[in-house]
Length: 128
Image (cartoon, rainbow, N blue to C red; front, side):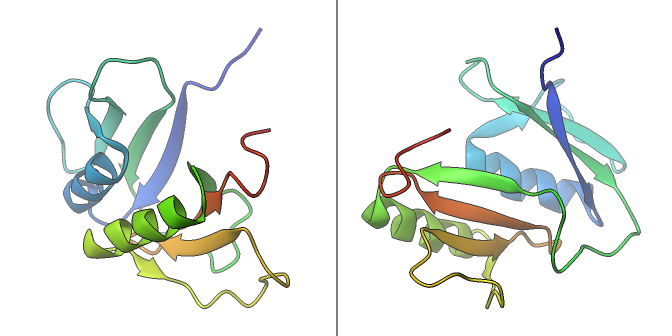
């Protein structure tokens, strides 16, 4: 049976992206080093988890990506605090044109423009 080992994001600046995603997720470089073209990040505490690989790319990010990350916050207060923390790390809130009425998610983009969502998991009944 297959399992997801890594989620791979294309980025313009691998070192900047590694710093952002490392702080955002509490991850560290798997081999202890960040190269200009590639790095694989893993949970800093050694717990099992999906790896995040960052590879240098010259392709621009999509405004409506077909694949994206959903990051879960415990509730609305945690969601607001996490979005504020991510913005302080260099992310930007996105004025998303596809928000439904009363969404349980906030669209954010990393410093490279890769869009992802911060979900109020308490409202959406948690992870599927």
